[in-house]
Image (cartoon, rainbow, N blue to C red; front, side):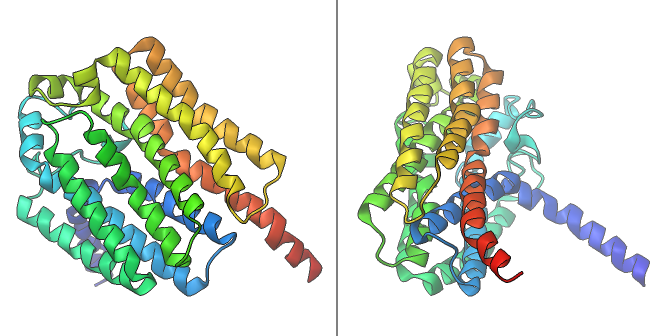
Length: 324
């Protein structure tokens, strides 16, 4: 009985793995750090346990649904790219840790992909409503903008602006989930910080990775339409803007940060964003675009770690020492 149960469990893991790949779960888990960070910074501390648990479930469901939605909307485009030999050299690419675009490669069907999106959308909507009905509208906006972004593939390179807005939806919704009336300045700084990080550290490098296939199909991405020279300048410029915005974000938070925290934030910006972007600007090489994407993907986690450690050292440890 135990052996049979273990066998069924392994079989289930094999069957479910392509669906996690559809949602790019390793990348989605990293992106979840941004909403958690937004909630922590706007409150100046952690919310109640109930809100934290519900929030994490909602964020996970939302990111799982939206990432899968991208592949559902882009299904025909991805099939064309696969048939043209694309998505095969992703061993050094974070989004290639699991199968890239499993629907387009025939691993799962389009109907299964749609059901997967619907399955995770339900807890995301319910959780968003329970946290704050405003979050539902932000979630719907993110869904709608993701569809628009995919449809603009052959229309305009400025679709990257739409993508930047999509990525801000999670952190902004998290702010309203824990604080119904947040500071307008805080929300604006958070929005711009995530927006520029997404464009320079994620969207442009990701499109650069698929540049040959996109050229073949005359896609209107920034690397294809503007050329690699100007694309590298845009990526570097947006990431340069990310640095002062990350500092300002700490200043507008209720948390009081030490000089060491600001130094660590600057170090994160340099190591994960600016130095890889500089390397891409100098080399114009596709592999450097992959390296920038990979390192930039860890940026929210790194900033969350700095803020979390600062909060624990400043608030939690002193209290625990008092009770020793």
